[in-house]
Amino acid sequence: MKKKYIIKIWLAFFLVMIFNSCSKEEKLHKFSGQTMGTVYSVIIYEPDLQQDEVILLKKKVEETLKDVNKKMNPFDPNSEISKFNNHKSIAPFAISNNFYEILMISKNIYQKSGGVFDPTIAPLINIYGFGTEKKEDIKISQQKIDSLKKQIGFDKINIHNKKLIKQIPNLQLNLSAIAKGWGVDQVAKTLLENNYQNFIVEIGGEVFANGKKKNKEWKLGIDAPETGNLPGEKIQSIIQIKNKGVATSGDYRNYYEKDGKRISHLIDPRNGIPISHNLVSVTIVAENCTYADAIATASIILGDEGVEFVENIKNVEGYFIFRNGDGFEVKSTAGF
Image (cartoon, rainbow, N blue to C red; front, top):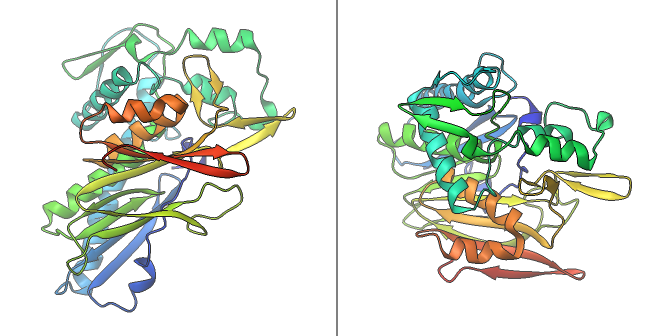
C-alpha cells in the first residue's frame, strides 16, 4: 500500500535481541518484505527448518498479505474497500467472508468504545491531511468539521447476510486503525496452518508471538515516546509474551504543526478534532493482534478514560504512558 495508508502511527516495537541474534542462532529463521506502506518481518524458531522451506513459506506469507491488501487498501481502486467507498448508493453491497469478519470485530469495538473507534472517519482523516489530501491544501473550519461529522458513524452501516447497506450514500470506510493487526493475524494463521508453532510476526510495529524461542517467551521492547527517536532507539519497558497479539498507538511521531498548533493523526470522532491530551502511548496485549490494534486506537483517543476502558474488557491488558512535565508517567491495567 502507499505510505499514506498508515494513518495510525507507525509505532514500532523493537524486537529485543531477536533480529540481531538471527545470524548467530541457526535455529532462528527470518524473512521480511514490504506491505501496507511499511515493513513486515517473520521470525521462526525451528531447529530443522531448511532454507528452501523458508523461501516457500515466504511466498505463502506474501500471498496472504497480497490478499489482505486486495481487501483493505483504499488507494487501490480495485480493492474491496475502494469499491465499497465508491458505491454511492443505499443498495446492498456484497462483501467477502474476511471483510465481513473484520467489520464485525470493528463493530464490536465501536460499540464497546462508545463510538470512539470508528472506521467511518475517512472524511475527517482526509481534511486533516492524513489521507488523500495534501497537508498544504488543508482548509479546516468548524463549519467543515460539523458538515463532515454528519457523514460518519459506524452505526450508519447495516450489516446483514454478508451485505453492507449504507444509510448515507457518501459514507466511507478507512480500516487503517485495524488493518495491520488483521494482517499480522492472517500471517500467523498461515504459519500455524503450515505447522509452525514458534514464531513472531510483525507489521509496522504490530505483533503476534506464538510459542517460544529456546523454551523462553518472546521479548518485546516498548519504545519510549520521545519525539525524534527512531523505533527501538530508546526502550521504555520490556515485556514477555506468548500466544498473544500486541499493538501500540501513539501521537508523538505522526503529526505536523499548523498555525502554531500540533495536529495529531489521531482524531476523536466525537468532536472531529485531533487529540491534544497527555496520553502519548498505549500498548495493548490481547488474544489476537486485530483486537489489540483497534483497542489501542480507541484507548489513546479516550485519554485518561482509556485505562478504565481497557480494565473493563476481558482478556485485554494495557500499558499507558502519559506526559508529565518534562518526563513521563506510566500506568497499566492490573493484569499487565
